[in-house]
Length: 94
Image (cartoon, rainbow, N blue to C red; front, side):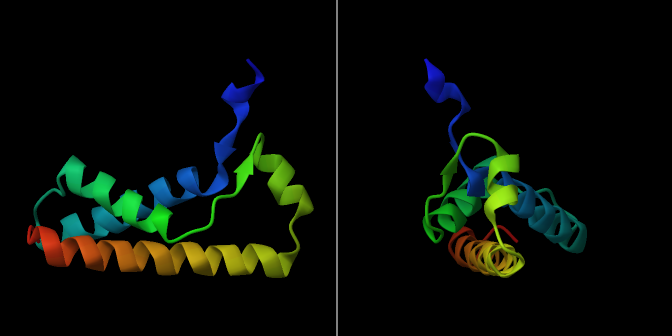
């Protein structure tokens, strides 16, 4: 099937951003962040972003303007910040 190459662009970048954010939290608190909490943060962040399905990341990079890329980066940062705060308040693990 040709569908294996299709993915939501935001998934990979949100996963990396959430991992970075949780590493900072762990360093600040001195405790590791539970894997389920990290997954919850990623889900919350992804649900705040529009779906942007692509086959190859390079395709998206080629067709984006600098302004669109900047807007997407800001959206990702805002979604991850919201997700970390949202899950942190509910999980009470930090």
